[in-house]
Length: 508
Image (cartoon, rainbow, N blue to C red; front, top):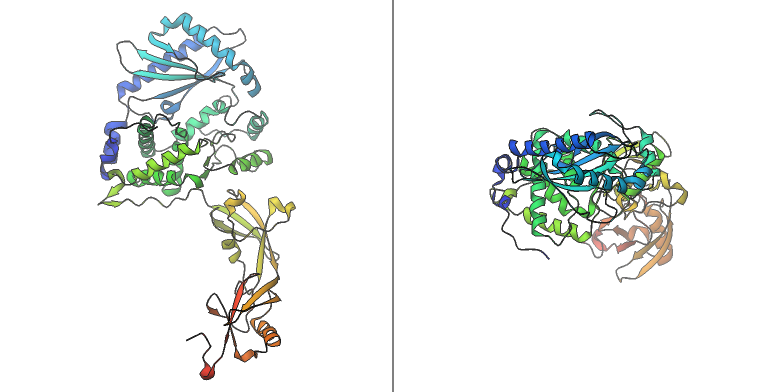
């Protein structure tokens, strides 16, 4: 059920005033930021100095994540994930086995020493059994603002890192071999998730705030639906900027419209990044490629290759797409009563395809995964040859890629290699005369049009110089091959006859 709500204030804002709207309404006030930081700092101090856990358990580090850590906080709305890296977790498996007990111990410590924090702290009941976090609501004395903090115990897989840190591949192999649920151990990669967003230029963070504000308003008016994760929209916004502009300064309305349009195309979304891991390692590469074959939308966490953060009920994406489509008709997405043109951004990135040919060097081409296979083949079908493409990674199946399909249909959203074979096929060609009678001829694809005419003469008695053959309303020249005209098996060629005066029967 969708609850009635007042018209979103954003929808009345002229597109040229979006930057002003963000600055006045969405930027957090200095006072609110200080309240959030103070609350987080007090909890960190408590955990490190006064929280008595098992004798072998120490807090290695505490990392502030969520919008507060990424630098995309909205005014009066801050989701803070405080990830606590503990010495008692020596592996991902340790985290699974000990996490629930550790959360209970931390809760006991809060209940015992809650006065020491000098804030009003409410511990919320877990949303489900086996929860991964301890949820707190914190309120400074004499203040009305509430700060929600999720405490998440985690295994310190990365150790001490810098802002430009890239994990060694063995960490991701260990993650995949832990065989957890998708995204189960993403807390161990919190710093990478935070840095991925935090590195964004200031104006892109403002666009992120605008998209998050829109999402928040939609969520409040659609309480019965569990919308797709907010992080998916953050990554989609970053992708739109990377592909559309990639510059520090850009038109906010154009960027916002691009994100809205991409949401309406959610069924084609398939995104991943290679900032922290890549596909070169066989184990990591195979895992990511399998994730990319999942039902779309697919947006893989740039820090955790096991997590498709766009995974949600399809009805939730349908609703979000409807809302995005409606948004595109509002004042914030219009200029001079015309829709603002979004950036030219496709639902997935172009990829490099290497084509190995029978002779000569391999050729690299850039194409979109939603391009048809025939588009690639046409680049090589010259001088009347017919080409077949085989996917090198799947060569054992010995099946040529089909013309009517796209790379996306084979789950190919990453750089790959094809083997090209030039073939001479045996074709079954139907020749239809003016009485709509069809006669079947078995010919080679390298057969010339003149050769086919001689077969017709031998079969029907119509001499060659009185025949005119057409295919797709185009007259065929005697010296060209059937392959030159891309005539495929079981297709029809039309036969017309010469009349006196040099005209063809059935032609002007």
